[in-house]
Length: 505
Image 1 (cartoon, helix red, strand yellow):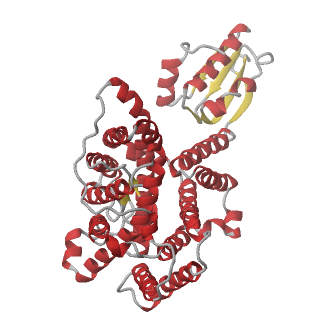
Image 2 (cartoon, rainbow, N blue to C red; image 1 turned 135 degrees about the horizontal axis):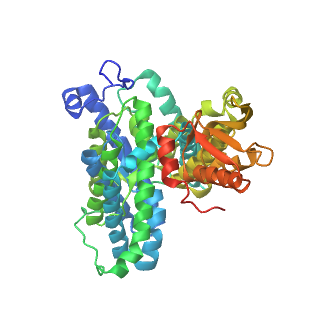
């Protein structure tokens, strides 16, 4: 194909570079303030995920620092935030419970190496098999999970928490209409913290979530026997961690691509996540992946677009918890809850559930979206929800395509008056559409000569070849001959290679 006729990819917005941001005071201010807001939002999340994994809060905080800083250089999606996450914590918690901290770190290291291998092997290209309805379900489920994660901070708390959350939301909704010089979430956090201190209010704060570290992370080498037995213990968890982490990271990267109208390297993001996990493991961290909520704060709320914000989120996190721990500890949880509630509301695709949209959308698409949301919310695992959504989409697609296959019969006579039954098969022939192909032929009433015309169809798999073999065998038992014509090159090659070698059932 000549250059003049090659299909062109749709244009995308040019991603601002780090160099451009460093040269622009306005862009740099946006990146710096965005990194600060994300760092503040990371602290309670990292502590809570550490509790899920069964490790000291410092492990989660240090993992968030090393993941964010590493992925800022290694990742393929600028402005995306990676840190300790709930999904990874759930996967590796059994290792910590049953085998201890050293085995957990060994699992993180192996999981990172598996991610590097999967990334270099093209795992990122699998994103093209995730349909839009699954992505919509993923986004909606994410919004619900973010909101649900805030509910514990709104139950059995002093009544002052509720007006404080309401004020925080009001600030973040109203301030952008006046000015965008400073991110509204940062203003809300500072304002509510200042009010809490000046009024000497007794409300839940960050310090209540767990003890903050007072030292820098150090290199750590897990003390485990490097034997086949150790590998058998950690390998299943490491593989699960690798797949779950990559799925969440690549889906988040795709979401940010859509928000910013830019493209990113999914291959680089895949092996970059692995490398970041290896680095995190060598600093004794619990591993992690892309953090969807914090990424949306960074990209959607704070309008950051470069790796600077990601890098500074990690740096600010370390400075805040190690150098300014006493100050951070007094931040009321109400302020951070307000930020995350706004993120959840902004994340949900409200258009997808409008009555007009639901009437227009095919029922299969809506079914896939609802299945993705339901499974994700039920399991609290975005990766499982997405896998189920894809499987439902594939099943419904196969069912829909299978119904488009038709078989038409016609009896013609040659110049000598000898009759021939001609069957014209139209549609895509694969396991779902070819299973009942056998039943659509008149074996007893057909003349001795039968022609199966596949000009307007395509043979996709061994199931179809087996069905054609069964048809010709049945005719042969009745002493009738069958000629298959019209096979395109791909179908002919598959039929020639498999015909006669498949067992009949």
